Length: 518
Image 1 (cartoon, rainbow, N blue to C red):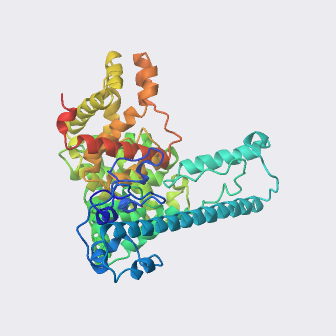
Image 2: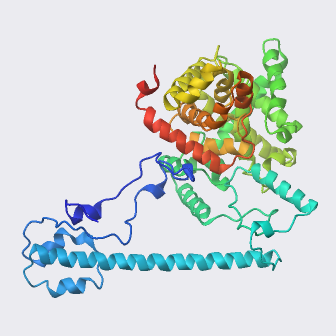
Image 3: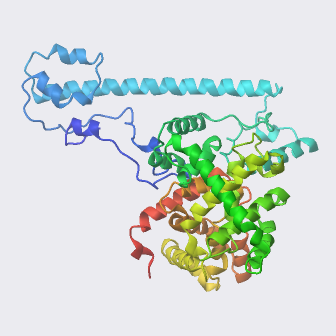
């Protein structure tokens, strides 16, 4: 258990996992900034060292205890040591007694672990019995193959539930026990113990008079609970100050400022100088996702104002296709601040009070503006930022997966043909909206998340499909696949794995740019 450097060194040793060295089952649930990773536990049942540890000569127990006081806790084991405390101790006696203490502690740890596992099994059995009773089904299904065939109405209910779960920007529901029916498909699943614990951490952090933004970034990297996401995004984007007392006045001032812009500029949308910009915005909004949300006249009206005001206020770039998509995540998240419905995308926005809609509109404008401030070279003339990032993506992939890179090159597939949209729309056209929102939790927690970390996410995203890419032997089929990747059923788990792999790539390449330069 201990090294030859002495027991004190062993007991003070604490290991933190290297950021990015994450099992792919859980992915970014264990991010570089997750507080749960600040230490590791000592494995129970470990054997003491067989090689004697050389210590300087110890004359009294008090000297020995002062040198190794962190090797054990006070307890029954100390009686044996106290019995010989008055005697002069030699190294052999010291080590023999210490080994005995350590062995006893290891046995106690094993007993505690066994008791906890036994208690957990009992809880699982009780939970299964309660679920079965609540569903009103007393039949015991022994295996999946013995399950009864669902009726058409049941299938319809299950399909509705699946569509519902896919539209939610929250952690996916844990899988049901095999053979058991889900009797609560229409009810929002209760928070898991881990989700509840994370929510409490966020609430505690946000309740203080001055929010620690660095700690907020650490917590947010692995996802933000839906209930606190609106306030967290406003803080992470820099829209709101960390000081609680200043927030309300800041919101009032910024919202008033936005609508002053609307009053000043929006009537000019049909002027000769601006009509082309407004017309392009008007054309692009119906192309946005999700379809049900974009078809609401009130939503269209709000988005047109936000995009037109931004274009007028940023003449260096003006409006460029792709910017329209960047409003949606902010809008949907901020709507959640005022409604209880889970299916936000199907919610009738016009039913909200006018004052609430104005707040959502102004907040969405300012947060989108903060985002675009960091990637504005993506949308200036000729979009040099995107051109550069696509080139960097090509060079990075050639280093991390030469086979995939060579396969694309052999079939004359250019990265610009599929990755331009990845950079222009920040993968919003490639994954469902719920996944985009989860991605943005991490992007807003990373330094230069939208401008820099996104590159590594795109690289991980491409390599994620290496098997399917290598199976395609035709230019057309390859391009069709890369432009229509099968992510419709993706959820938090897939995004967590993607983010974990992206962080691993960043950890390996970000500080060594020559690794991806030819």
